[in-house]
Image (cartoon, rainbow, N blue to C red; front, side, top):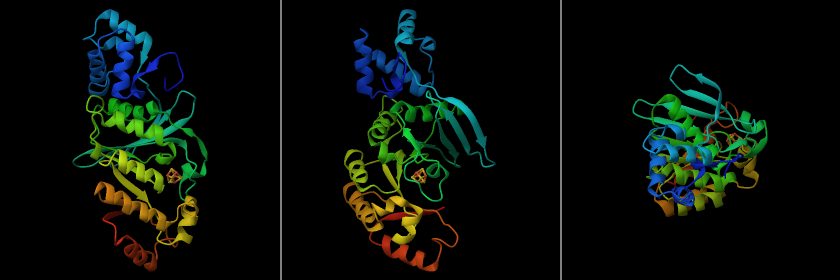
Length: 291
Ligand code: SF4
């Protein structure tokens, strides 16, 4: 069980776990596919409404199983259609997710922690402190809840909301597997991006386990003294270490890496910052996303 409560949360289970769960209830394994189809494709979260199951099964599943839902506290819609959702979790904590429409696709940005221990200087989440890691089902639920409310599927998922994904690596990797699995959300590995401040061990593990998932690194500075201030974790993982890890990621996956760079007036937007950035990134096949 991933979250509190007396039922088993199916949206925190890998496909193999879902099959095992269903068969442990004495039911045929193909019932797992039926549940997955209702939840991930038809966005029906109430077992009593899964009409291709017998009434007895619907009632049995309804008693024993659950699809985690999040309480919507607030949604803010901006002029370009971007929607920012605030969800309340079972323990009363809150997290944000964002739905971003593009002309040809739609992306979900989801959180991985309640608060964040990284404490980036420019980030309200970081300044408000760290509360806890999100459970797997809470990460998956953000995607399902937004898709259900917007009645439309996302084309991309970016793990870049509140939190540093590699500091919650077990739950994040499991959520990635659930979202990517063809029998579950079927997002497709290469349509998912993990955004990190740059934790070399995590980057190596991502490359080895999920080489098709994209990597985005929040660099934000070309000099260590500037980055020490903007992203305090730079004291532990300075720029050279992160760039080496990015090269390693590229060697393993063959994939281009994206570097995020938030321009802050008078801090990291000087001519010398731009020159140094170009020099640093020359050996790496990359995109730079100036924010
Ligand atoms: S890692 Fe992300 S969420 Fe955490 S403090 Fe930095 S910008 Fe904010």
